[in-house]
Each structure stands twice: as C-alpha cells, then as structure tokens.
View 1 (cartoon, protein in one colour):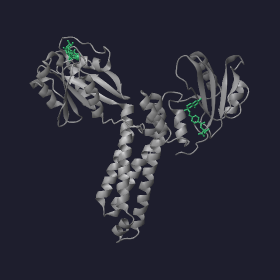
View 2 (view 1 turned 135 degrees about the vertical axis):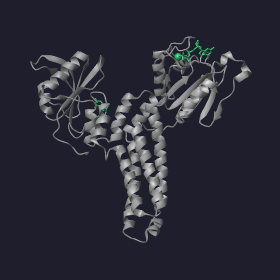
View 3 (view 1 turned 90 degrees about the horizontal axis):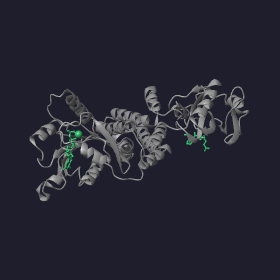
Length: 452
Ligand SMILES: Nc1nc2c(c(=O)[nH]1)N(C=O)[C@@H](CNc1ccc(C(=O)N[C@@H](CCC(=O)O)C(=O)O)cc1)CN2
Ligand SMILES: Nc1nc2c(ncn2[C@@H]2O[C@H](COP(=O)(O)OP(=O)(O)OP(=O)(O)O)[C@@H](O)[C@H]2O)c(=O)[nH]1
Ligand SMILES: [Mg+2]
C-alpha cells in the first residue's frame, strides 16, 4: 500500500458540478498524457502553467477554447500525471470534451477514483481522503471548517502521535520480555505505567474532538413520538420553521414518517415525526405505527410528546415502558398555551435518563429551551479545534481504548499486556489506513461523487 502503482489506466471525468456554470473542468489522470494533449490541442503546456488553447475534435473542428494545465507526476493531486481542461461550463460542451478524452483511450473514472489514487499513491491518508468527501458534503460552515482541518492532516497527526507513543510503549515491553524475572522493576523504572496513562488521556481527548466532528458531519436523529393529536407534527413544523407535515385536529393524521433537518450551531438535527401510537384496526395507520417503532429503535434521542392538560397519562406510561432505555428521553409537555399559567407550566425537570420540558408548538413558547436541550443531549460543546470524523473513526478509537484498558488489567502478565498493545495499535492504525481491507476502501470511495 501507499506505493506508486504504475502502470495504471488513464481515467477521465468532469470534475465540476453538473449543470451550467461559468467554467467547467475535465480532469484526466494516468499515463500517456502527452499524446492526449497533442491530439486535443497540439502539445503539452509547461508544467503547472495555465495555457490558453483550442480543444479540437477528431476532425480538428473546435469543441471549445479554454485553459489546459499539466501536473507531471508525482506532483499532482493523484500523484500521477494529471491534465486539466478548463472549458466553458455548459453540460453539452463538457460532455463533448469528456467524450473526446474517452475516444482517445481514457476510461470514465469511478466515483472517488481520483482521490482513491491520491490515497494509494501516498499523497493523502485515509482520514484526509474521507475529509475530501466530507468537505464537499459539509452542510454548515462549522462542518466545512472541521473537514478542512482534517484535510490538512490535523486528525492524522493526532493519530500518528498516539501511534508513536504506543510504539514506544510496545518497544519497552518487548525489551522487558527479554529480562525475565525483572519485568515489573524494569517497567517501573521506565515509567511504563505513566506512559500508558498519558496515552489513555491523550486518546480520550482525541476521542472527544472526533465525537464532536462526527456530530457536525452526521448530526443527531431525534424522533418525536406520542399519542395521536398531542401535536407531534406541529412540533416538527415549528422546529423546522416550515409546514412540512399535515396538522389537523383529527387523531391519526400522520401515517408515514415525515422528517426535516435544522441546524443549530452547525449541528444537523434530523427531526422525525411519526404516526401517533395507539391500538388501531386501520391497516394504513398500523403500518405507520410499525414504522414509528423502527425509527424509535435507531434514534439518537427520543421526544415523548404529551398534552400538558393531561400530563403523563396512563397511555403515555405504556409508551414510556416500551421505549428503549437508551438513548436519552425527553418528555415534552405540549400545548402549555391551553393551561393556566401557574397550573403546570413548570420548569425543566430532570429524572434519571429523562428530562421534562414544557412548551407550545403553536405559540413557540419554550421551543428555544428544547433546542438547547437537544444540543445538550448531543453532547455538543462549542470548540474551535474540532476535526471531522465518522462513526468508523469513533469505533476504532473506542476499540483502542478498550484494548488499552485490557492491557492494564493484564499486568503483570507481560505477554498478554503486549498482545493487547498490538491489538490497540491495529485498531488505531486502521483510522489513517494501515490495516484496511479492500472492502473498506471500496465502501469509502464509492460514496464520493464522480470526478472527485
Ligand atoms: N483546478 C483544480 N482545483 C482544485 C483541485 C484540482 O484538482 N484542480 N483540487 C482537487 O482536489 C483541490 C486542490 N487540491 C490539490 C491538491 C494537490 C495538488 C497538487 O498538485 N499537489 C502536488 C503539488 C503540491 C505543491 O505544489 O505544493 C503534490 O502534492 O505533489 C493540486 C490540487 C481544490 N481545487
Ligand atoms: N393550542 C394548541 N394547539 C396545538 C398545539 N400543538 C398542536 N396543536 C393542535 O393540536 C392538533 C393536533 O396537532 P398535530 O400536530 O396534528 O398532532 P399529531 O400529534 O401530529 O397528531 P397525529 O398525527 O394524529 O398523531 C392540531 O389541531 C394542532 O393545531 C399547541 O401547542 N397549542
Ligand atoms: Mg401528526
């Protein structure tokens, strides 16, 4: 891995977004590019110097006049020879340019293939490749900033530092294994335990930053459940600020799942409205209720909505009893505009795994508190140094943490201690790309857009 893999097929794709734009780019990476340039416009320009030229069809008729850029290997995005054709940004003209490249022998690039080659040629590591996709997909400025931080290698550097520390500890352990009988003294004199503790603290800090990054990228799935007519759809509409779901005084209005996304401090909150939960003979409504339970079981947070006029009723308790223990529950008392001010318009209440809040989806009173509460549940704390991360990274960090904890508990059995350190190292290294399977690479790069 991470060695230049020549010869590789020449690939081409439109690198700019579909549709009309001022300028559009066709990118070619691979070999034999001098011949491509000769056929397309006469000759290769000087390396990394934009040259104005005329792109020509096979019969020499002009396709477009534009700029050509040549990046000789290995100093290019992919690490291979790269040519960029900067034409006018119309879909027909760009497709003509692309077709011409394919006729000259290039193959259409698969989604993510340019970035995949950059990774395979050691230009970027796996977290940086993922950051490229995350930067393009970023739904908020905060997410874009943290993806840019990962792209510039900040996340990778932290992982590499952790790997260095882990390797030092491993070396120490291996050396100690050569002195049977004196293990503990040896480890103590080298402060192995201190090193391990420091490593664990550093890992925790990285985990926290990565968790914030995953939140920024993937957001929080919040499902609203409750009996019919308590105002679930009204709450969704109120949070999103749009009439997404149908609201009527008729119980059983919502059948299908309705969802929308709002951003708070850059965090995407995916709010999911569901069919009111009740026993019903109506086939359609029953299917809707099944869907509601499916959403409940994969949510990051659950809002149980109740009518403040009745409070948490017997039927609500039945729903509560069926909810999974994790994730956190919010019990929201809606329609406070319909009750006397001092009656049950209480403050936020906390009770074990659940928090109660009081609001009106109709007037909006109390909804700001709910937004804050959702951020709190998400575990978001505004920080400047977040780097983008994915579930995959968090799992690997969690595994590393687990193996380090195991390592501690194995002492003084040094062989077992060493084995746990090796497993920790493996988990950690999978983040930036050592020890990755082709399956994983396929999965990561296939999620890119074409031309990237
Ligand atoms: N026209 C154009 N704009 C683009 C890209 C591109 O491929 N083409 N990029 C595509 O994502 C991004 C920029 N990323 C790039 C990353 C590396 C290299 C590159 O040539 N690297 C060489 C030389 C480095 C240097 O000059 O310092 C290298 O790494 O060796 C180019 C673009 C965004 N803008
Ligand atoms: N006064 C008042 N009425 C509300 C409030 N929230 C919702 N309503 C009304 O309650 C009725 C039911 O609202 P919906 O949002 O459709 O309730 P739902 O929980 O989605 O109902 P189903 O989809 O049938 O399960 C509508 O007439 C809403 O206008 C509120 O905060 N105050
Ligand atoms: Mg509804």
